[in-house]
Length: 384
Image 1 (cartoon, rainbow, N blue to C red):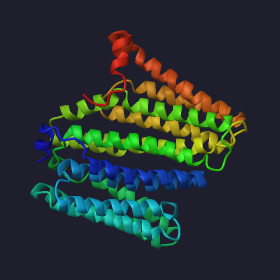
Image 2 (image 1 turned 180 degrees about the vertical axis):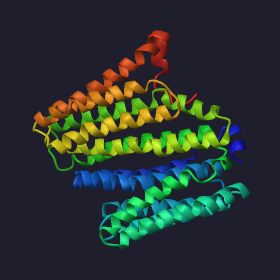
Image 3 (image 1 turned 120 degrees about the horizontal axis):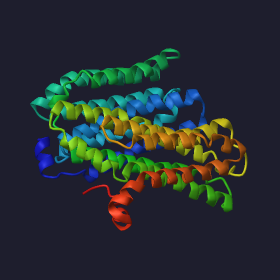
């Protein structure tokens, strides 16, 4: 069925895009949660929540890659899955608190819907889900138990859940999947652009309680510039190269392994980087001409650097080149941390300047090869 979808050129449906919007709302909630607890413990908690969320989001991407939402039953079940994600988003600030069980209950629903739809997707999918489904449900029950139990058992359950999911990815038979590369890559590309967009919304919410003056406008524009170069890093050609690698892999098991490693776990540090960056920018609102706390300065640069490193790992997993540009950019951005401790706006301005320099440096070989007009015309296309 997947091969038929690929040969027919099926792309992401509007219902899947709607699903992605609901998922990314949970990512925005993580930004709000981390902003209230910008500590190492807070980052670890956000990573644990993001890991289990991303595992199941990716699971739904695999699901709709194999079985399009083309019937009333499938669309209704996806609505139930979206409801589960929405409940988790609402409960995210209390995931480790009194109402953590609500987050866990939403996660159980998301897992149940995912298993039911796969079990009805055909004999091979059903056989695969009989192996994967119980492990997914075990992870969901661990998250639910984490919402019900006191410390230290709460965090032990939360740590165990993504470990179970990590193991699940390496024991279930990936050769049973026959991924449609175009649909799969487009689905993940769309959720990344939505996540970057939601980070701008999270930053914008920080302006509600500050005067609309030059300082506010400056922070907003510089924050947008940082988001732009996050977009550039992912979408200025590497997304198409990645799709070609996945589409060119004819061995079903190897294609599945590439998809799991590169788009599954490989995207996790990029998403965490988006969350942490949004928090760092938001913390400068109203304090642009004052020294940052070290934690805020580290979050601002560290989030961008983590995104770059995550993208370098993504390219490396696919056997693509130019990863050292990403590592160099990450190192340069980290070097701006002392600037923020001196005055926030200095770091906030230095980061997009360095990101721009990294983008120009990486793009120079393509400009020489294609000419300026050709390179500009080709820049930033995400398909074709």
